[in-house]
Image (spheres, rainbow, N blue to C red):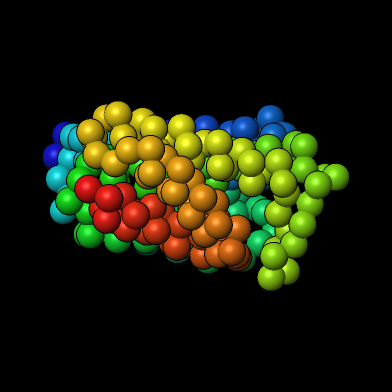
Length: 209
């Protein structure tokens, strides 16, 4: 119970801080949205190390409800102000529960969520900062080569950490997983990558155990 309360408090503080940056410091809403995406997602990645799978599933459901209400009433403008499909935000909340439902390994859950939080987040930030002159389109969605490279490099680092920490996998996983994850992050557009990509990561790592 104490762990759950602390988790909710920390998540709420992240959202409030992002809202403060957006409303009163003039930080671009895309940056505050990605800050929340990366901070909350990275925090979530380590939940299985101190919380039960059941509690994580319940928190995922709570997140889904909060995101739905925030979208409807525009409560947290720092994460909704970007003009884009809101499916991704809903799937971000949902995939936490799905991963907790199918996962049997804390390390696999961690790796999948870090791909979603750090990989996807850094790809977006790098693309926003340095991707103007190297953009390409996939199914109508704009990507950047530097953003894709940032995701791939982050994926390699996360996979190496997984292999060392869990003792599972090897060089084949370190090579194969970043390739598949990068492909999924590119092809699953309009927010669906928030579901497809981490589930693919979990599947590949579970298959390699």
